Amino acid sequence: MDLFLSFLNNTGYFLADYRHLIMLAVGMLFIYLGTAKHYEPLLLIPIGFGIIIGNIPFFAGFGIGIYEPNSVLHYLYFGVTSGLYPSIVFLGLGAMTDFSSLLAYPRLMLLGAAAQMGIFTTLLGALFLGFLPKEAASIAIIGGADGPTSIFLTAKLAPHLIGPIAIAAYSYMALIPVIQPPIMRLLTTQKERRIHMYEPRTVSRKELLFFPIIGVLVCCMLAPTAIPLLGPFFFGNFMKECGVVDRLAGTARSAIIDTATIFLGLTVGASTQADVFLVPRSIGIFALGAVAFSIATASGVIFAKVMNLFMKQKINPLLGAAGVSAVPGSAREVHIQGQKADPSNYLLMTAMACNSSGVIGSATCAGILWSFMLG
Image 1 (tube, rainbow, N blue to C red):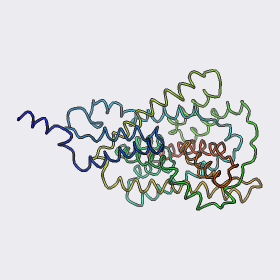
Image 2 (cartoon, rainbow, N blue to C red; image 1 turned 30 degrees about the horizontal axis):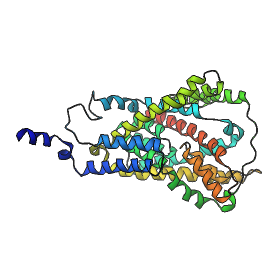
Image 3 (cartoon, one colour; image 1 turned 60 degrees about the vertical axis):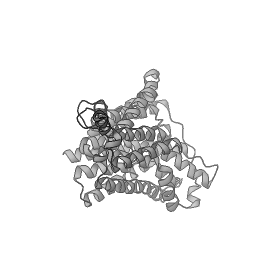
Image 4 (cartoon, helix red, strand yellow; image 1 turned 120 degrees about the vertical axis):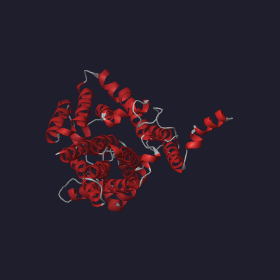
């Protein structure tokens, strides 16, 4: 009987308290949203399962938990804390990105830059609420709607906040169909949503080859601390466009990015241990993240409307919402809203141009914030 009671005392059923139950419910909610609602399943399912794994109670000292040295999860988590997984994800993103639309509509790069306003306004808000500068910068990058970038910067500046910031960033990426449409409809008229984009010019192969080289030089010379993200990103894109390393490019955009995404999601989810995650500041991070994402969406739309005041060929203001770097969710949502206004309005390719510029913009902003905070 003593052995039996000792066994019961060591089970997760005995050790669990209300915090574990809350986090287990959150993990199941993520899995439900990814499986039943198809909200970014490639992100939410690994994260949701990681939350469940990370919140099964256990005795400390057995080398089980993600924060215990020499545990399996701790070794896997090194890819998050070192920035390894985000860099690999960016390599795969580069190998998947087609810059032909962006080069055909170069002015759309401005929308990707405008959407980053959410980052800097949230930085001020986080400082006002009492977060330390490095914490505020990590929270602000959620406004870029880029999970890997948020994780990378937080790992460098405020590693103790990786869990709540990563969950907030990926949650808002998954909830794009809920968050962005009301903002887009509020800030645009039916007439504006019906605007068709003019025919793009033909982009030459030389332009596609030179763009990643010029891009990495311009962006990384401006913010050298963005090299771990933008270096692999532009390298992956060059592999795709050069046409002589198709095997490498294919591996980067399939097996490599998929492997990194699995471990990134699983370990980020597991890092949300109840005793670390369920603290008052996590609520503040989620609130500021929502503000950041909303401001970023609104900034892009408003800037597109301002651009139209000075252009003969008008652009659809909905495209500004795709200036955040949530690829391809925000571009898809812009296209859906455009088709609701006019079923013949096809905005997906132009929205992807804004999306790809948003990826570059958010990674550059992360590099700038990192250099400022360490300077």
